[in-house]
Length: 207
Image 1: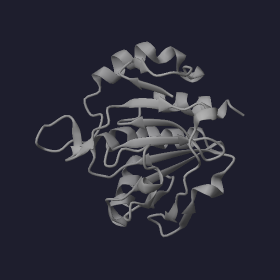
Image 2: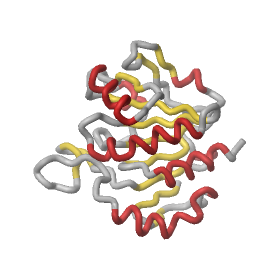
Image 3: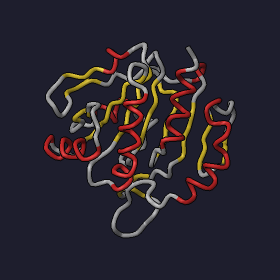
Image 4: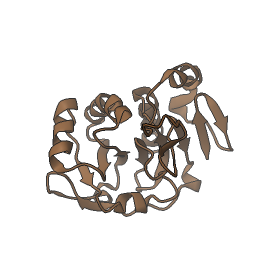
């Protein structure tokens, strides 16, 4: 497993091919990002909500041999359509946990919209939102040009399915699933386009 936060690397494992050139970018870019994850109004930078760790834009990758089992994530999106991540086996899937009032969620939304268009046919994006109603989620999608669905996770079943991988209430968090549906990478905090694209490219290159 490999963790990267503002350019530092921890733990065993190889550096992803698509991210070999990102050391300097992470050191400068991630350190300069002010809005990495939502924090409470009391100014405490260590928690997103009381008792929960804030995301800081770090990413973690898992080699194929060490990846957890595929989580079961299914439900209904904000358009009322049934969604089951298992239906996308064979594709790389990107799960983005978000809500509309979260500043870094808004900051990363245009990049996510672009990625969903650039990887059409190879990658499926799915938003997961346990906070907003359908009207708020739809307004967010229209504002940022998002065309991929978002799961209504009001019962937190998707969060529960990824327990141990996704820090509860660290928003945004993005998880890349490989073609078998297993978690291959995770970004806790704002997902920059260059970082997320690099992680996606690495998983796509696995064949």
